[in-house]
Length: 299
Image (cartoon, rainbow, N blue to C red; front, side, top):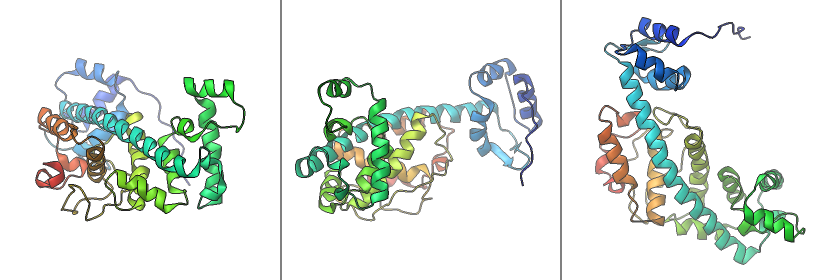
């Protein structure tokens, strides 16, 4: 049985007093007020947790400053922007490859045909979500389609898959029954088996949502972890001694994926530059192993 919540709202000044009482050093109170009036107390709380000596009392380690927390927050914000751009490239490519390989062999409306699904319940759930997502769309090619056609009740796959969410796309691919077609899409991205692409899509959907909703990436435990094959056709990692539910393996997948689409991409260089701009940020907060810079993928 829980306890009734009785705390009341407090002023920004009182928030600062609490942080001081817990041992956080604040050099400029006026500037801190401006920050807390722009970035909420509990959004920043996820970042200063790493600076606490005791999570029960929320006592800070000696010498910790509010400026250190803002530096980590700024790094995280810029990392999300960098990552979101990379995810956009991957997402568009995945949609295109699925449309290309599935539509030519299984027709324009395969996603509406139950015989192409491995699980009937998931098929029905996916189709219901697709209907809602298409109905919400205001894209010109969707509205123009419905002006002209009324049967079937959804546009063909090359239109529909452009407006469904990444999560729905992931579930649609996972539940598709033809392994050969799924393998063909996976090989487009340098993956030997569709089970890896299925896993990576599931993780990418979660990671994309984190970036889209401005959620913290540093020191985050992800609910799903990507399958990490030990051998890959293209340049990959050699050391697998990392924490599986951190950002690091997710970034490894993104980099590998991105390299298969646009080998000339600058993601690694941009990421390393971001670290140089924020020298106080520790890569261990992202789950990076000690010698990650020597990994073939990250050189």
